[in-house]
Image (tube, rainbow, N blue to C red; front, side):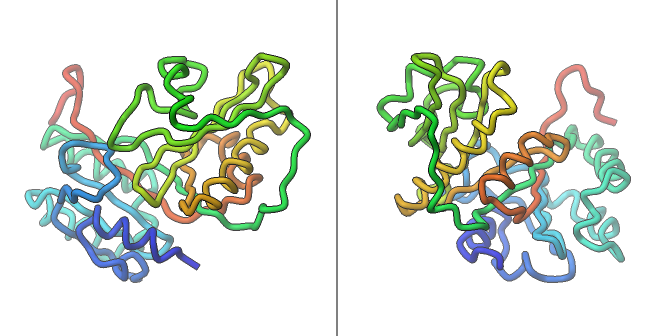
Length: 252
């Protein structure tokens, strides 16, 4: 069952109704910049897409709407994220100086893990305890690169080997409700289930605090997928967006 709260949040960001995400057909809307969005950009995305496994909602600059209407015609929505369709979309976006960015596979809590226990030595970090860890490359997935008031890191958990940190999981409050979890485990400690343990504990604690934890990863990051699934998360939706071409990329 799709969480209604997530549909309502994405509807703000994609300028549509929550029901549009559960339709069988595809929906194209005008790009917007809602004040209650997850603040990943200061400008409206030229194009962004999301699917919950049926049709796809596409929010885009109106200049590309006629082409998009032809592009989606007769296509099943979730197949739009396949490489051959992405290639067609990429070619069109380049005409406007944009290209596709990453595809994000998003997870929501599935299995109940509230009785999970661990023998690891752990330490909780509240928001005030997190700043000393900013800028450390080994925790670049668990935490933002710096304090971001628009989506602050609000909670983290570390696993310790004596005084050495083996791994860290952190939550950024992308909205007051939706807290995104990231995880880093140092290379020498991988393969021991530390990532799964930290993400599970952090997910449980976020839910206790009234938040909705969610987790995102890329298509090919199988290690991250295994952590998500092993921590009680379940696949929920896929989203992607465009980004401007860099100076050394040719917009044609």
